[in-house]
Length: 319
Ligand code: CP
Image (cartoon, rainbow, N blue to C red; front, side):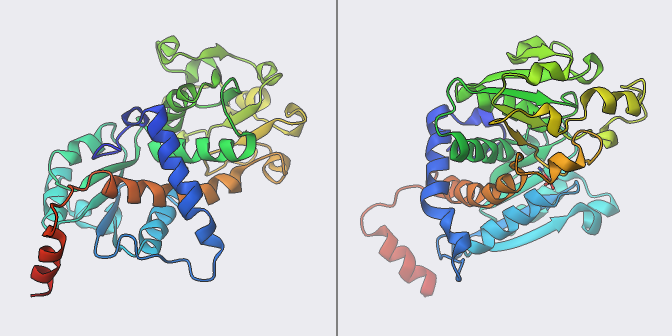
């Protein structure tokens, strides 16, 4: 891995396979043991800095760090000095003074993780930046699909819903294509980004396009990012045209959603409660994948020690 994980495009297909191999081989089974902790990152410090609400990403990064025995500090913007007007630069410089090894950042502005990486020596992991990217969500989705389907080459996936405001869609279009999948976006024209063709995915405006897909990937309607603009003539019309229910899902098709779900908006309640969806498998995968990311970002970037140097450093640390 590179020293930071800001975009899914920081990883080649081979690197994705390698990180997910670590998740599968070393960390997936750990959650099922009585004792779930390993000493792998003992003595390392991870700061989870979240400027936006989160349940899955924040919980899994916190658990991942703790299960690897790192010292984990969680900073929520609402209860930090950011609420007193401190800039992102000054917060970063402040936290950097504690010499963390990794900063995991969620922020409402696209590019915030890249900005933070300019002011810290820590590895920076993008845990979601506005409409930008969510690379670890993409990794856990690929991981979940590989567990379900094996090789993903040639698999057809429809990404359905509010593509315009979705960082998950941006990361997943790239990530799925890297893995050889064929991607189609299904949304009303007003919820697709301008120049959507440049993302390299086909486009459709009706759920009829779900026929023949292997995977139906639903997106949350991100009303908090609509900022008063009228992207839809009416929510009722959107629901009637784009809310996916069990009748839209054929035998063998699997349904994914990054969460949180809006029942009755993008997914009907009966589908959310059915075994056709993989939503909780995605959540489970998120922990193993984020453990692998934390571990690999440290190990892959470690400066090799000269012979005998490790011993000397240990003595100095004790002394
Ligand atoms: N999928 C996802 O990012 O969920 P959270 O907002 O709960 O972290």
